[in-house]
Length: 447
Image 1 (cartoon, rainbow, N blue to C red):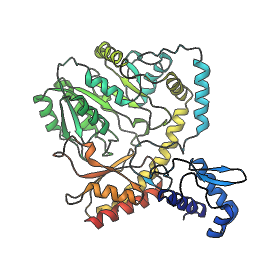
Image 2: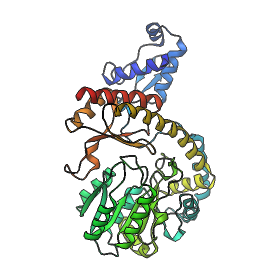
Image 3: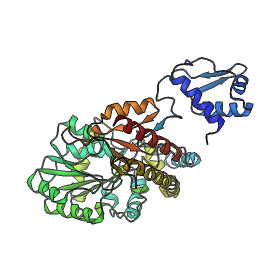
Image 4: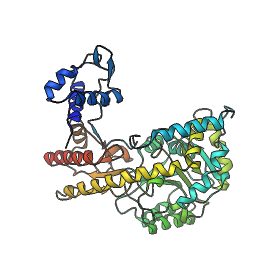
């Protein structure tokens, strides 16, 4: 049941969104709100303190509370919005004193370090990575490890550099990571797709593509897929690794959610591969939202080529994260705080997944297909052909529920499977229940 101070917060945010209260204007006094809601002074003050901590209002001594200037858009006042649209988690459930500790230690340890940044990352962090990666059945050496800003930076370098197989075309799953699709379109490289659904991919179709097309590398998210929220089984992973070796195709594996995988028995494709045709990418953005940092594991025979193109990228972009970010991650790993954070996130995440799966049962009663919801942040609700995705997305937004339209995760209209993507990265159990109910009602009403 919603507490009264939460109702006050929600009403004030609604008034701001609907512009009943203008930025810079004074809010009703504590006494006025006490009378309106028939509550104590402490209840109103608590509501104001929450709004202050969210930078929505500020107080002026001896005067009252005012709306922060510039708070006038729908998304800026968001505590009452159910946000299924982003995969970037908040830090609400993570202990911020740990961050401060790691930052302080990082500054103390590296205060005399030169400002220049190694293209491969700082050695003290890189030395920790091989041992850390063994937890995911990824075995490598420091020489093969690059520290980068994130997976997108590594993908941009890999897309532009030539590969020893001399091939030109990139194969992606459909659907797949929308920012990589955008980069491929911008770069005007040859790209084709292979259909992926809740069961995975057709391995016979994959072999046919590898055999008869000019495939440079296959970009895949084997577990906790974005946007489907599914994972390949062991048979599929072994087959993909075998076919890559047989047809001289490289696998670029995006394991962005490996730390938080609740299916502990799942191993990456890398663990089944020949370590010649395999590039492993990992991100920490889901477990340490304060910093953007990732890892690339590059096979030995590609090291010089990859290092050369990372060097080129230095002149028009950044590849390595800041020294502070790298040093902070180093302390997180060295002090075991990273393990602590992972366990905290997993605990909350398992409960949210269960709530999501229970909610999807209602969708099935109406013949609406829901994919995923077993691991990771993402899931995908397929829509009937007669349903207009854009109308659904905009209608939900007006009701305070944000979702992502599915078209952006596909290469073309011809291959698009109509639907919406959900992410539970920024939701709790109650929001998931309420949001799914609103989504289901909107789809039913449209149908």
